Length: 151
Image 1 (cartoon, rainbow, N blue to C red):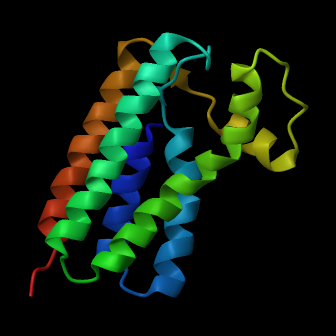
Image 2: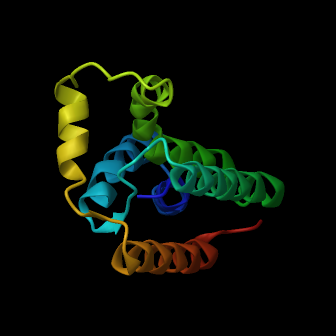
């Protein structure tokens, strides 16, 4: 799933669950739940299409964090922490991706990466994957906008 969807979902969790001891781990675990849903995915992680998609998504995810920081709703720091927590499991792919970019074959995956990979059984490059991503993003924006408190 796009990083922006992980960030916005984590932000929603942070806006609803005000106890950080609960909210941050729940947001982290939500990452794997989201990845189990059908979502957009490009098989070749070294293609220009993937790199453009990754750049646009990372920009949107960062923009969401910046908007929350600028608006500073109630519990804004927790909202940002949960957004980052929800997106953070994908950072485990960074070393593997950098190896692929150099044209080398990555090492075998450990048990956590294997689990993370198997959870993503429904990656789709076709319209369905992108449609589900956009629909989820719109739903989460709606939920977040209706849960932010400005005092």
